[in-house]
Image (tube, rainbow, N blue to C red; front, side):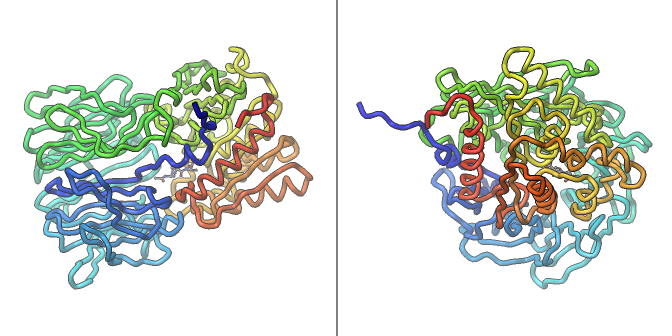
Length: 599
Ligand SMILES: CC(=O)N[C@@H](C)C(=O)N[C@@H](C)C(=O)N[C@@H](C)C(=O)O
């Protein structure tokens, strides 16, 4: 029998992803943004056919995707090569001709919302107010545009309209752990959570009538619960909480008088139906461990975009108590059983704080004995049970991967998430050191023999661990990590700047701390070979953050390779680039593998 070689990097990375999706009002079409052609474009399935047809050829990732409420056209946002300056376009249901409807060059635009009759597009924009944003109403027939709201003390987004459009809901982002919503009815402006000086978040809300809103908030609690706000009575009511679990999405099923709720519990998500008449909350078994988007159609059918550790992005439909997969993405030629499901482990940090981590162990037949240590990005994010082609191909090539949800991560309550604020380089760093010691004590790794790799905040942490604890590692990969917190604070998008004080620190007030927390302070001890990867258009962690650390280390004669991607931002959206990046990473790591890899 003929034998075939092991799957290579390209094969794993030819697993396609889905960035966003929407369902037409009559449920006859599903549109989704996917990299099926190697670059992100919109594709559609004209149901019941699941054969996808390509609608756009812009080769750009989509942000903001919705149908006209009468199902006559689609609105989609695209940026250019990762610059995050999203502009809006309208297109016919069968694609082809795309018409640009918002063209605010070099400006960030967000959250398109169409009026019920499809004549008006509401959107939030940095135009004229780069820190706090303005909201515009654009008449799609005449092209006349009106500013309807001006953000003042926080980035302010138009979030939703009531069914008859008499109320507008605004979302205000003061920091990642302090977000409020206000409802505006005529000239009256009301907060939908009680007034307090205690920081809390409102992370989703839905109108079920002109005057009743259901919202998800952690006001007065650590985990996000379901509450309601009656606009006429100005009354907030707590409805339903779960233990150590935060609701993060709420959708309304009018026909069945139900709410669909998704929740976050550590490294997995759950899905529920909440009966508004009886108050019963029923868990619905989801076909994936992470729910990235939930849509409830007028018919009551629910649509989910989700993924699991061993299953890439797919769209599923839930109807009559049954799930149907509408897309069938998988790793080409690799069975799910040959992919690795992570173990969930818990270890105690330096101060006794319990930290949850995912440990992906290479299968014995592949294992090369190497450990890749991956601090996640965000930092107010988490590594969860979701598919990463990059992890699965490294595992297939023998590398085990350890990922801790250090303090500051999401999924463990508001207090835990706040623990990184103003403390980028101490508590979270020591949680990482405790994880490294745990790996050594448990016999999984040896000091000095660990491979360190991270992206964004994870890249920052990789640089900082390299600078302060180089003796644990033999080589380091930094993917667009901030290298100097002073220059990082100065170069982030304008709307992030008001957040930096609480999130990272103030360059004057916290000068000593920011020096201590900046990787560039520790150049002398960064002695291990490094690979640095950066997207030239990254607006979050700009190219200069990588340029400066590479130049400084190369100036000292250190072994540092630099890979710059001209047409990418904060991530690798084009298959060709993604494959080149991970081929580079694999060959870099293979140089340090004790057991020569059988490729
Ligand atoms: C709403 C928002 O974008 N807030 C930002 C301050 C934020 O938290 N951004 C992160 C998602 C982010 O991009 N962080 C970088 C540094 C990363 O680690 O990916």
